[in-house]
Length: 130
Image (cartoon, rainbow, N blue to C red; front, top):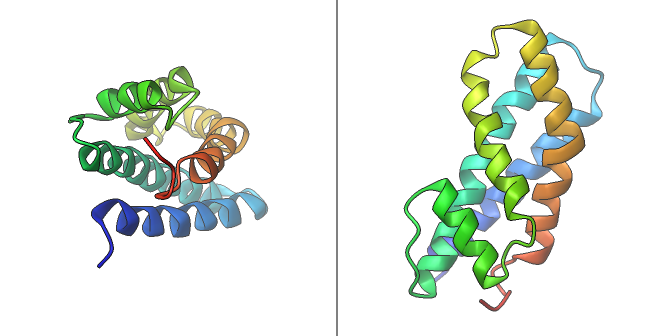
């Protein structure tokens, strides 16, 4: 039977693949909205995956911020500050009905988030030791 972390990781991989596909398409209002929604899903799965990994190691982290900080301490993440900044970007997505803000978030997702989450998939797979 797969662990909770392994199950979340599989969902995260699929979500990141979808995000990369959305970002490879020509940008229009629909693709921008899809990218932002996909970012939200990937972000939630990323912190919940890290939380599950930490829990399996006997560590507690009950929020995204705590999960990212503790993951930095254990070596699952090496770019904690970037992930802490993503929290603020995730909180901004509530206001994406403003076209200029939606464009800014889209660019952040393309330039910063996608490479960071792809690195997380590579560096913090379920086989990675804590």
